[in-house]
Image (cartoon, rainbow over all chains, first blue to last red; front, side, top):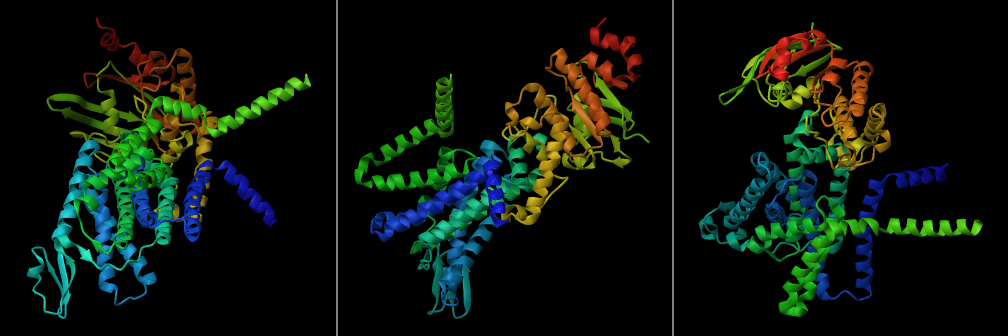
Length: 373
Length: 252
């Protein structure tokens, strides 16, 4: 009886192609995780690679979450780093405040991640309400501007704590007017220092799996269909009763919340967190967009893999010094051609593993037929 | 009482009176035709009925309910579904998913149920699959259920648009030039399909069409528009023999 139901599930899985694809995606992540762990135990992971593991998870999460907006909803957003910034600072602020109150990292960090995600999601809704009335290039430019605004506002925030409680100023750290026993929590452009280093590779992989789970399950549901319907034809989607505003906001908010989660992971991996153009500026937003485009717009697994490769590659090429960015640029072009050139797509279609297998089977079958005659 | 009552509907774009003093009354179960030369304002009437444009004057009543000036999604929920002159399918979704989008407001579950794959997700998805296949079967599209909508041949894309519209469970179906781009054989088949939809789904249908064979073959009543105004209204045979109508179509 039990064996039967397992067999049923297996045949069900065979028939359900999307589900099978999703399971392959999860399996890739888990396999990669175990591989790194085994290599680590064998002492084959050097300190350079070790330092890349958490950032890899951060950028993979960012790429997957941005693909929800760009690939599934079909709207170009260039403010993704801004949402990451919100998540990073809110979660780091929480951790810094609570480091004594909740000494256990295992309790504190999940709460910090949740706070980062929720705050970023709220910002997603707030910014989404005015911004999502725009389309295409206009939306891209306005999201870019909002991303910069978030970064710059965070750069001016000063928060300190002394025996009288919390102090807040947007001018300078001196304006806080704290007692002598005061400590700075956020110090303007100097950001937050001394965030507890709660992030590690295992948590990163768990968060990546959560991101994939949320995005993939959402895409393959009633809501995902509605979102993709909006992408394919707004007028038609409206005509069958799809609430465009609701679904655009929902997608934007979830995408932002997941970016906030990545931000929390990022913030707790560093001793000091500053909102510099390099970390949270539009360069970063565009970098994430590059991962999404090269991995395949709307292809969740692809954007994850592209993020991993393109993040690790320049780091690994550090030995080549001046040629590093040149090689990186060439790889970008090659990936672009492989993914999107019509001839490349046609070639991949005729040379897929499945077709090759079918061909081999066909040859075998025709030979055996000839033998029979 | 008529299913659709429209009184003195009018809209202007700048100085152009696109539709003026448009009144129509369609009984339940009727197959009604809206014809007229190019640019007469037929599609504008459809856009007014479905809430794409808000009328400057006039009242639209569906089944006694005032739907004038409502948003497109509310008009759809009230019971009007449409197809488009230039086909508007969800091209990158499969055929069956296009129909499932049409079923969106018929059966649902929460976002949490979809992310966490709660039992309600499985239950409703199974119902959606069944209902969508049922509709596709009626139009002989069930074999292509997993094909991308944009890969369907033209005639089947037109059919799929009707499937999707019917999935929203409307009281009134608006077809905007369903026979456009079809050869005579396909048009004949389409006439059968439209009649079948009316009988099988107990549907009321208002259609815009240029193909006179189709119009005279299936429509019971006609309204002729010319320069945004009603030129003539009544039984199909009477309208098509009206000298004014012939003049508008063929010139003097």
